[in-house]
Length: 251
Image (cartoon, rainbow, N blue to C red; front, side):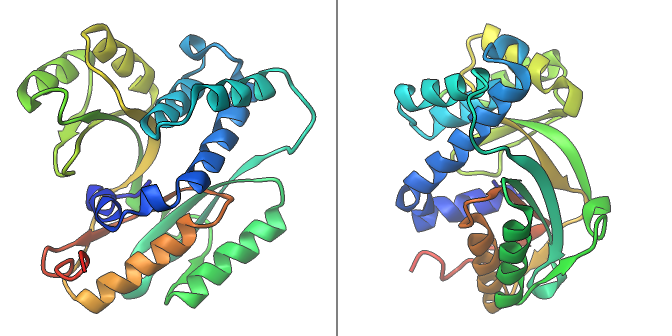
């Protein structure tokens, strides 16, 4: 996941999600297992698991895979013990980047993340070096093909949402306070609105506009390298790509 909706659009253009479907499934299975282990197998009382299930369904993960991952976590079966770690850094043009990981080997992960930054024109930062520029919020994605913006906005406001972002080509992003994610999602679903994905994310308060195509390519290369690591669950940045900067990405 990215810190800006345009990054989602870019990934759809480049076909990254289809090309890396097995890698995406691996990341989702890891999150399902951890969520079930930490909060139990009932999604109605486990918001983290509920969000992971929505992500799995949006990626068209087979139900058998989904159920096995939950059962593995809820059953407490012996296996990898994962810990959540955040890394911060800078990309080309001083773009701020946050990397959210689940890992069973901290040394391996930090080495891989540092290498990805260094090889792609970036640098690792210290704790809280960029975090101050991001808010922790809930985001609920609803496909644009399923509902018009006005009725969604009315339902979301009534449910307690903060804002709706419609910039992505395929989905609305309903933003909520961190503590309200589960309640707002439930309220929308009770109104028949189909949620394709929900999660807690880091959203930048101040964006770094990128107008130069070469710089845009450099930032995208870094974000892709980070997302390609098996230990990385989400990557967020404050990059705001202009249309001019993205002109050649479809080629």
